[in-house]
Length: 214
Image (cartoon, rainbow, N blue to C red; front, side, top):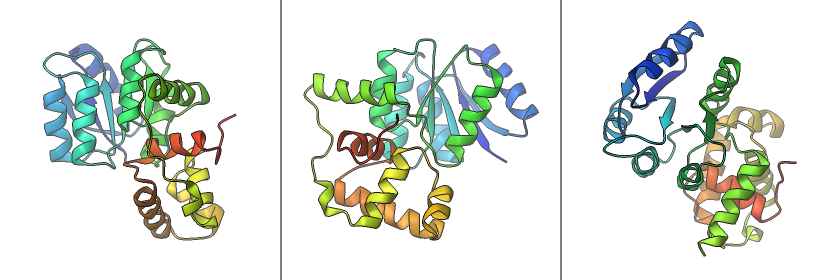
């Protein structure tokens, strides 16, 4: 059963999401109406997936996401937004959010997104990846520049599959290794490349030509 934390300042919206998710067999373990509550709930409950609204009082979703990922780099956050090109989404993905879902998405799209992220995937399409990389460049920010030549062949393949959206389980099956080995190799990859999370690793792989999303 996937455990979900809902973060949105509109009670009716949260109630609607709760009803939908619970009807699909998921468990809503908490609701937060602002970013500060989200940080506290996430630290206390360690949900499988956090659905995070962007615009909220006291502390917005981007800053809350950044704080949550500083505490737990493995936290799986999906941003909820009204607009595909919302600049705050870029900032959240740069911080390590697994992707975003539009508020007008249908139920099947939402359930699929939560299921995929819970399995370890990132909702990182080609347009979003390029936009985030452009945003790094425009602000003269850089992803770590350690060359991927430092990675061995197996590590490079794991990084490629991660960037293409495969979960740890899928990577393990494709490479005929255990999920524990995948997790250990990913930790080593993050250390070698000075990366903090899967989203940054996917962006790095795309930028360096290790993988593409086309």
